[in-house]
Image (cartoon, rainbow, N blue to C red; front, top):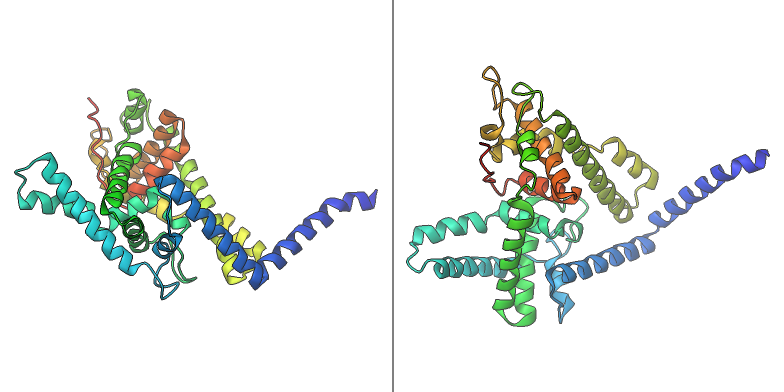
Length: 326
């Protein structure tokens, strides 16, 4: 009976030892990195609905300068040119007599680092772009460069700028409809998310709790995924990585900056509070931001949409124009 009771413990120890040995082997670590990278490249091809004739272009586009001398810098420059040309042409197509100021204004809103990083987030490029161990692949500059490089890679691979333009316009349209300009089907749910407890008993407290749970869960998943991959690259202790990821599951970016993100989204102008309550108070704005995450998840029935909405807003790429709450 004693032997039988120890079987689960023995099995657990065996799994831990096996995982530690696997992750500490340089050869296996290299194989894991290669396997992960190849899978992610396949995922990108499926998402953008473009099959590279020469996969080298895509590999290069997803390689940061910190990782290799053969990186995406040149492709990124080409991609920026494609963005500028596409936006300018689209602006004139919409209105032939557009002024140079109108074109420049639209360009500055479309080709800046934060916006391009948001497009990179839309494609989840942070999970594929290769960086050195001391760099964070979710950094805005890195994501922005990778997104631009992707456009450049498509243009060179197909030999047609039009193919890259088509992708960019598709992402521009998709990001706006799916992530940025989320339209609530349930108007009452939307209003509830923008109602503070000082204004009504039917307020956003419960939605805020739901939103915070979604944010924490996402942060834990991202932390664990990134750290497990780092453990393979750096031969770090597998168990220590898991423990650190769970203990530090709440992303500082997601929790500490929720008030700032809410203000970028102008939630302090929308949230309903009592006359004695300051709508711009960080706790009020933060609560509204979390509530919007929770409300988006409930209304869409897809927590992933709430996470995507949150990611884009955290990057500060867009200021949403929410429907009036009259």
